[in-house]
Amino acid sequence: MRLSLNEAVRYLGVSERTARRWIRDRGLPVHRADERLFVNPVELWEWAVEQNVPVSPELLEQARRKPEAVAPISTLLEAGGIHHDVPGTTPIEVLRAVVGLLPLPASVDREFLTTALAGREAMGSTGIGHGIAIPHVRNPIVLQVNDALVSLCLLAQPVDFGAVDGQPVHALFTVISPTVPTHLRILAALSFLLHDPEVRRLLQERAPVPRLLEHMRTLERSARPEGDDRSRPRIGMNP
Image (cartoon, rainbow, N blue to C red; front, side, top):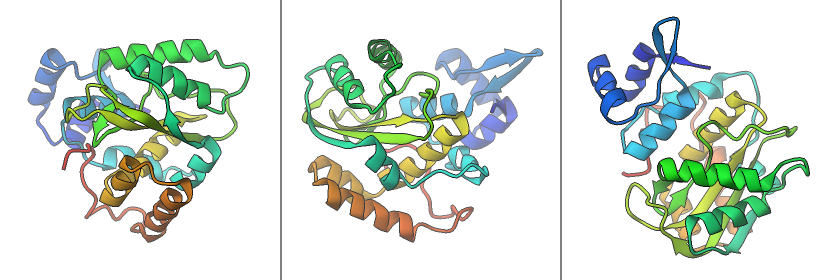
């Protein structure tokens, strides 16, 4: 899935001239093919979060209209696990602990995955604000798994990830997807939940698993019908 530069600027709400300046000055990621510029939607979303640039939620929610079904985040967390008191005092220590907890096939090289996540972190923080991070490599973590899952690690102590709002990170979500469209759908659903102040409060308080999942299920049940995004905030965790 890729976007033309004209499509990308509509999601960003800026002119093509501004986008081209961001490519030059702020590292907006683009690819060239047949003498034209294209943008990967996941890379665009990641860059917008890193740069604190508002981007239309439709960028991710377009994936929600794909026929491929994805379970609710609460269900994916049950598969991926919610872990309390995850150790680490630096980002690399935390990432190594996170990877060690992921329910991955035995064939996955966890040390390589840790190195890839750490390398991505060095390129720009995956902290999205409010003490939350979504560690990932530059492309989605698409592995040889049958089903998608989401893991949540609540840290034993907050760790400085260089987040956009300067707050140390206490909660990390890791998304594992079998396909890129699935990854986009999960990011859209996760972004919706993380805009809820009560979800963020429960994460900060390291709430018990049943309490956190029940609140997420309540939000998922009460979500607006698909396609009605009039009241949904633009992506990016700063208010």
